[in-house]
Image (tube, rainbow, N blue to C red; front, side, top):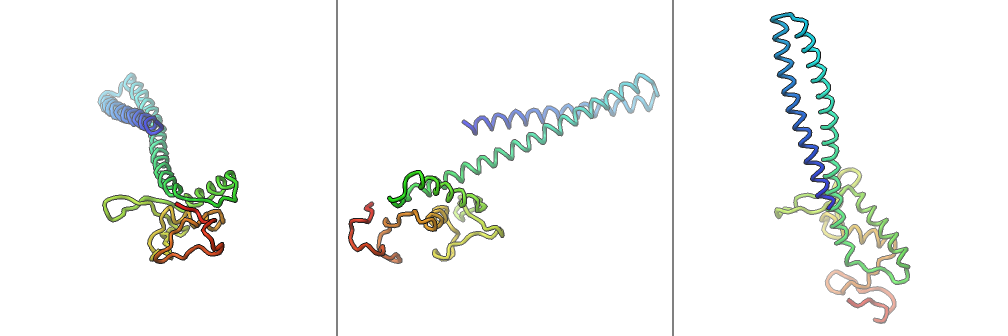
Length: 199
């Protein structure tokens, strides 16, 4: 619904910009015609007409410039909003499979999760070519360099990896769901199965 409204607004602004552009062209032709007539006749009435045409042209130009900058801003805002929605969708998918420690109240989990999401979203995300004709979300450091995961052969961090990293640092992520096998260690402490989450 938002995207539909934004698209209609952009289309209306684009039509207004095009209309004013046409008007500028018409007034410029009128000005040139009047200037030529003035050069040929030196007539006072033609001078007045030329003066009015110049005022009209200036007014329409100012209107055009204002509308054009509004259109450009609306277009950029729309692109930013669309990018934010796409990033949010990737982050929603990343958080979907997460499990949190039971001892934390839901309100605390929600607050900390929101902080972690905001931090990850602040890591200069951008969609880049994934090498297979698609796009993938990549994150960059303050220096503009892509963030790479040292625990995954220096591949680019995924949204899920960054989110888990932030939540682990906060101490609220329940990692009991990890399966043992190649490369993973069994959960430490507690010896019995009773405390482990079962998938």
